[in-house]
Length: 158
Image (cartoon, rainbow, N blue to C red; front, side):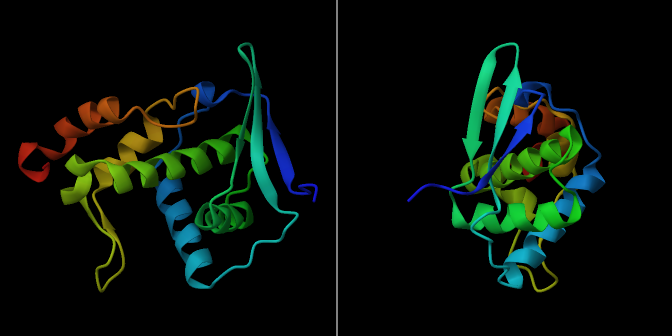
């Protein structure tokens, strides 16, 4: 069966995507969370990935993870993925989520399961909003930690 999902074209490669405001990421987090909580069903023709075009060639990143597809659908409805800004918000949020899931040093800076909803240190949003993404549209974990440490102090980090 042929994949009929849409690929978005980005004229800007991942490592040249613009910085965003921390509040953009907070709103994107909220939109993605609401989409997941509501059980938003992903249209099979929805965005399947993004093709980045730039001087270094072409890179296509596909949204194959079911959770990521739901988050992307929520972001498409609120932020949009029709501009470098929207694409930047999307990949910065996905990059932050990936680090929160894998970086042990970050665990003291957020609590996802609190009774009032997620509690995430503002420094994480600040760094994710401004730090450049890599060519693979991810954050360098060591550089992210280096930029975060001065904003939170050593006692908060594992």
